[in-house]
Image (cartoon, rainbow over all chains, first blue to last red; front, side, top):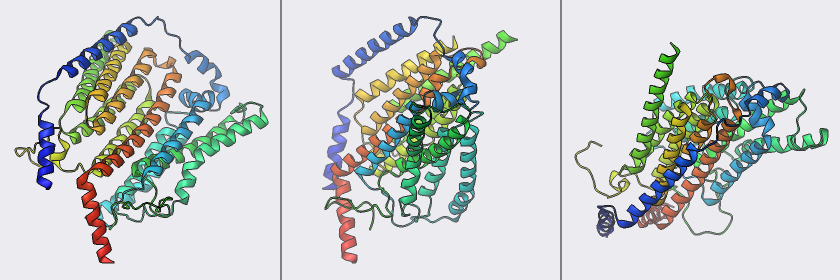
Length: 252
Length: 102
Length: 109
């Protein structure tokens, strides 16, 4: 019966030998769209407006020396706050679909992998933290450092340490929530002290932004690793809230 | 001297753009899904070089770490979880190629 | 000249991704096409604001592209988990393998 299903799949795939009429129509429509876009690009009025002069003017008031970080966290901080919340929402969506499929036992335990992961994880923490801190005056910032931290956590998840996906999920959830929480606290603090949402006073902005970047870096790292895990944590969030008679992953 | 440097930069830009377009074409029209994902990772890394050429080092770091370094393993993990592990199931036409080595 | 070249590259990447999104049948390839589309738009955005001297960069499009990269990875992750769940719920091979595994686990108890 398995062979019959496979033969049906093979036949279905082999009928697609030459481009059909529908495909040609789509191709022509796409080429027409491309031509339209190219004509639009050629007709952009030049010189283009640029905000580099204004950014350089107000850079001293923002508390950091890197113009991109200043724009990201201070001048357009509202967009970044919403983006961090969208990030958290994506993790919640992934968690509500399934729980993380990790195998119950190690397939081929290897001492080389264990040693490499043990040596690399502190380095990853160091480099990630340095990139987060460096964002204030050079290239770097919360996103870059958070991505490096997430690479370290992904390395732990795919290595032979099977206790990592089965840890208690409270530190993970707290770490994921720290970034948006700090943003909201800072926004309310801006309303209390200055009278406007997310308004940071110029002399204290460097301290606010340092805490904000650290919190956002940690939460971005953990949320990206949660995306890679692809589901609810296995430690204590294993059970589904509704009664379901489905399977429970690759266990067993 | 300046004209020569600009000429070298322009040649580099043309080669980089051509490589990006070729990688994008290959990743979308190759028959094997696994090859497409590997092409996507290479595409992300070349895009990181393009960001450096655009004087955007922050975006280059983020693209190399997130765009190539995390989205690639996301796709590979999804490939594995869909149980599309065997070479025959990954192809569009489902044919097993016996001439290539595994 | 440089920014025109990269703008066109970004545009053509967008067109490639768009074509793959509407033509390819496999869900993984559609999601790859979405990512290529997003990368093309980001390249177009930054290339249009490119100036030759490195001192006068425009940081606002770069900040927007940073946000965009992060949001696109989030959308990709959600789409991949959805595609995996659909595939696992509708594939007869996977369902049979899982039922066998659950039956073996029950027999072991």
